[in-house]
Length: 285
Image 1 (cartoon, rainbow, N blue to C red):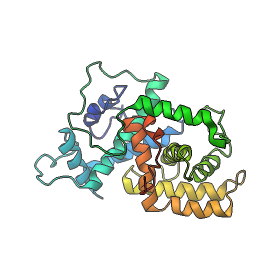
Image 2: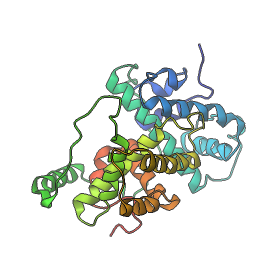
Image 3: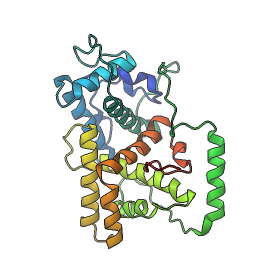
């Protein structure tokens, strides 16, 4: 039986619900071939094969993983003295979030063993910032009040929950994210939610499936997915104004904010997306 190229033990301190951090089989074998997350699992497998080469910034990523978790995922990382760069921490955060997506699926599907009850937690303090909530109950109650008030909004609810998205799903999701770029508090929350959703869908798109999941590739996946979705799905065509907004949304600077929504939801909690500011915007005042 094939096994993982690198140890996943470095993930053990990030609160996984399943024993994914101690698994040794390729991730693609854990996800049904027909499920959209098969593409994300395959990309993570490709990354695990690529890390030992140390190319394209992967050695720096491996050093960052060692500095933060104390686990060496490739040779030569334990002797380095330089501190990880911000870009290395960002690359590591993307990976933790992506692995936790698979963890959430495996836990919900009850298709993988649970994590030990006394699983270790990361001893490194969490940085303060807009992704931290002091009182999550207040956030949830505030969101509930906004939804009840309606604020004159007509919110569409998707009724389809199966694993195969219906025709027009991607275009519909993209249009909702574009339309949520408004100033009202409720729309800022919707922007966070739809940004997270579109980023996850782009990571699960089968195009370029064999390329490893790196930050650079993830941004490319998102840009390609936006372009493909806006041009190939004729059931829900984008208007001229929506296409103009999409060009801005899928730019490298904007994608970093969209990626933050994804990481916030899966490293922290989805409830963090319910805060009344747009996480994708530099201007959060």
